[in-house]
Image 1 (spheres, rainbow, N blue to C red):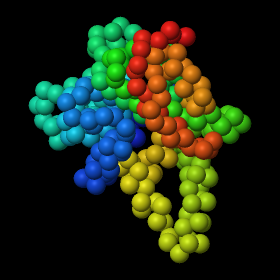
Image 2 (image 1 turned 180 degrees about the vertical axis):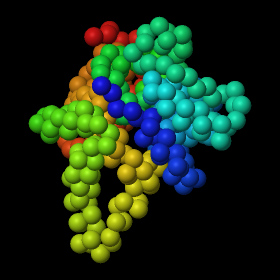
Image 3 (image 1 turned 90 degrees about the vertical axis):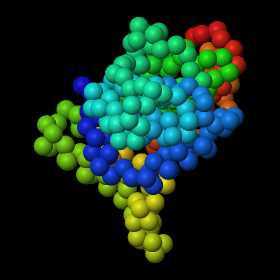
Length: 269
């Protein structure tokens, strides 16, 4: 049982515009990578819509994008066709972050970027180990992984399983209540502050994403795993990485964001 992420990303491309692309670029610029992305090789492991592959390429990186979901691969290829047709420095492929044979043919990269992906593989720690191996010495690993909220995470796992088990025509029974749970308090705060729907309108300023498509992605996203920040830190430290940048969700809902630099080969698990 797996959520069709690519179908949701296909719908997202319908609202993609220059402002969203610019915000995606700004989110990459904010990463503490010396010299930025220009001239560097980047692996976008689980490219999804292809937005951040496009942003990295526009910033001068040589990009290799792959995804397991055929629709996600098609979305990334569509953005390449629209904005960078026949670009030899942007490659788009179908592949799995759990396929050691496929990954072994890719080589190593200056930056491995996997944002909100590895926790949807069904084998998060193996997937994280696999991408660690693709970072060259002195290179960077940039990942976002769902925060472990304990009981709340177990509740959301039930929501996600239930959503995916329902026939598509009945999934609104889960999606709409979840939408109210996720956005209702924000709407109330915005109204009380005299700025109705301000957070909704400003959402694209955070990495160029769409609030509605992110809700669908969150509610439907299965498989689903979570991790505490210290678990991720310790896991990557043993593999020769130093933590250079961390943004947590303060113990709440969402992803913790990590930027690691490879300083050695590490000792493994």
